[in-house]
Image (cartoon, rainbow, N blue to C red):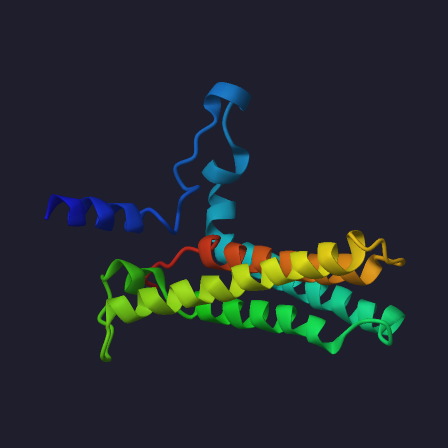
Length: 176
């Protein structure tokens, strides 16, 4: 029972892992963490930044298709699609559902929400691994020039992954 309470306490701190960050020792205090304006606008800022990262990632992929579309395989698009699906899966589950605080109807309840979250992260990590394979296995190692398509697909998936993390953990779920 004590292990369960410790685990539940750990999960409750997961969303705001940077909330209690203090750096008075190194730089005299963080301006953003203690700033009331930033705390009020935190959801807006993280949402806009995550959306911008996501849009720039897809913009790069579209740019690769325009510049070198005839030389790239159509299968390379699958990494970006699975990364986008992972973004939707990860952010469809609220932190209160993961902690078990919210009532989750359905067959699996909180366990189902956690399994869904794991599969969402698997999609994200799988797309990153696929993008690394595209970059290194198809462009860097065989010294295929230009290597911009491989770099572009890797950057697309990196930006989508960063948007997923920022959108999930950058926001605060308060009861309004």
